[in-house]
Length: 259
Image (cartoon, rainbow, N blue to C red):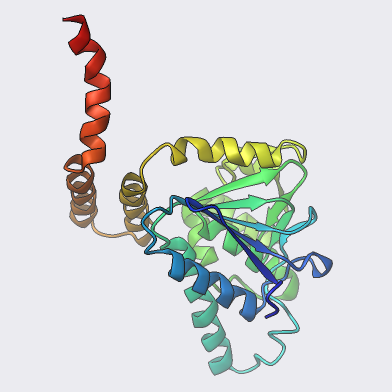
């Protein structure tokens, strides 16, 4: 991977990763995927981090799936399974990132690119962009855990339709299906992303991590009591923190002054 294939912009509380191969439609080579994984794992322990944004360069593609030239030597069963484990591990780093991850679909997300988008917690789409599980056009199926994610996200019938038809789902339809969380015009996209992030960034990192822990537990399908334990642990860690009591004081202060 060239150092320019994955751009990383660090604003302290928000980390932005940009797949930067627009001339080739932002394909996801194993080098680019490895860079995403390493960056997320390195950033995971940073106490100030509140959110991660993943996007593609240009305005045609978010990501156009796996890099077919990079994967051309994957031929045998063993090689295919090894590739699945490697690339699924990258998307697991996205799924299990301890803070919310937002995919910005500046253009189409197809194949493995759609799987990357669905691995994120939220998807913001440019009006006119589309998302598609188009693997079937190459006579293959989803491989990096994205099929499991899709069936959970949009339901059995819609997911099966997307997978078997290999159709592109336009942004407005994706919004109706719950596959997208917001849609903006090209001119509005950057401001729209900031507006989408603003309520999250008003929360403390501790609260965001506790909320994300609940989301990870739900995605994993953990048992009911285990999920409630994770929720309770999050409350203990946030309730007893000085941030909570400072917020309580701000709420109660006006009432105290009126007495």
